[in-house]
Length: 381
Image 1 (cartoon, rainbow, N blue to C red):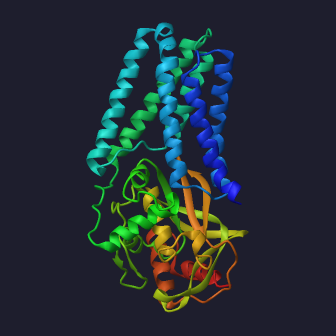
Image 2: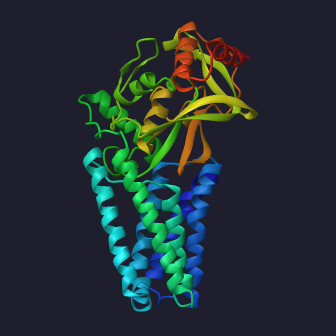
Image 3: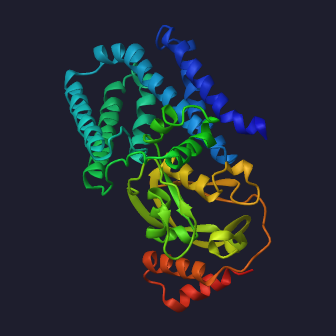
């Protein structure tokens, strides 16, 4: 298991080393293209393996960002000179326009959020794939039409991201709350992915460049309840008193999401009267209703830590010790958590069921009160 856990990061490191080697090579030679192709394959493999083994982490995200930065440095130093003498000057005017749009987009985000980020949308990912392909076509007869296609895709991606930043409703990044409690919460969120190193520095900062869908199928389906995890405090209807997240801003998007697994109630939750709370059984196909919030990865890990009573998932085997990735949705990874095993069932409290029902009414208005009640009752197993 340890080998599986470290494999994605090992692949990312190999991609970094391969890209550094490429920077020292003569561009577009046979050896250059072989190493170039291998680095491209590893870019796909590291994330896929991390999701398969549920080992996605902030360390992995940081390594991936470093590798991406080196890749664009490679393009600039080794491939750009070839492109400059091959492509018509008009294409560079459009490229300049794209860079200006990107600058406006990043500036808009920075003003609203006091941070830097590039959203991982499908168009941005497709643009990256097309840019990667330039090296294969730049010395062929279709170099110019191919690069015009790349430019067109990049323009669409840039305009879409700018539109998202201009119309999004997220606020500024929240300040770090005073007191040891807030520092401990921020440190815990970083500890789970960095081994405790630099909780207020690079580990937290890189989180702002990466968004994930936090998928709730329990009490956090109710927006007000979820925001107590982000901003701190106790929810009036029940639950623990939560430490505020370092980033207290609202999610930038929200969506209903059906989980293809069975949901059930288990464990004894002190804040909910010693009664059961929601878990999903990833070994049993089913249908669980959920709500996905598009948040920073730092905010997601903050929720994970809070749900595990301030512990890392692997250090709390009786609660939410399994991080689950459900693939991509609208260009971002969907992540939730449960227990590795099917825990003994336990009846939930009326207050907990009421909170779940309110969350479902808020997000599934087409469901009648009877349908909501039947769904929640069906999860008692």
